[in-house]
Amino acid sequence: GQNIDQPTEMTATEGAIVQINCTYQTSGFNGLFWYQQHAGEAPTFLSYNVLDGLEEKGRFSSFLSRSKGYSYLLLKELQMKDSASYLCAVKKAGTALIFGKGTTLSVSS
Amino acid sequence: SQTIHQWPATLVQPVGSPLSLECTVEGTSNPNLYWYRQAAGRGLQLLFYSVGIGQISSEVPQNLSASRPQDRQFILSSKKLLLSDSGFYLCAFGRGGGSSYEQYFGPGTRLTVT
Image 1 (tube, each protein chain N blue to C red):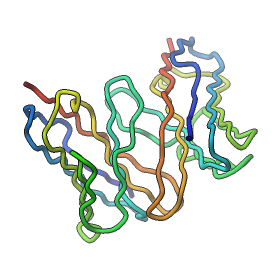
Image 2: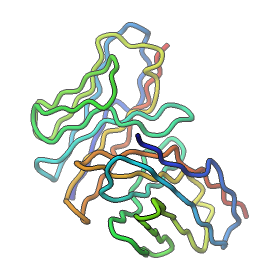
Image 3: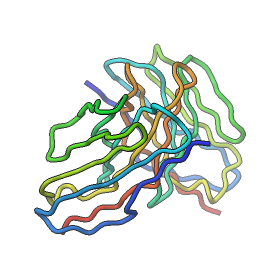
Image 4: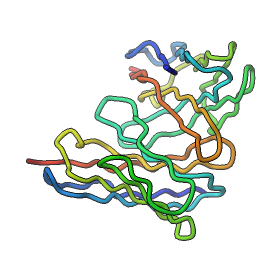
């Protein structure tokens, strides 16, 4: 079966660092995606990890451990505009993505 | 650069009416194309994907269907809408392979079935 778990909600303050965790159990694994989705809008691509380790892109970093079925998205120097849902998705064999339900992050001043 | 278009942006349809949502991609050839649905309080659910013209794979049984009449055109249809078909419908395309694979979403269509 497929199971992707993320916390439902998180809160943080401007300038802080927040880590959003994602654990997965899927039949087949070809990499893990993180997307950002603002309310009422389409998801936008943040990162894709296929190998173990940390990928850094500016204020955002994503980590993957395939042996543990675990990933996290790290957001540094939080800004109000980072308030959004963050979606973890596993790419199965082939090209289909299986999404978690997303983590809603609220950033306050 | 690649772009993806969806229309309409919003749609209100009565139960039992037909549906046709269109998605087109520009700036790339032979893309992998996907239809997802996001219902209120639920995650993104993959409905259909296509790796080429006329090739459609269905992920969940439902009263929806998909077609790919041209390389960069993907259509989602229904003959009779149900209340449970309400949601945010997103088309996506994938490009690259291996560690270079990326998947991008269109702007979405918000469907309300009344």
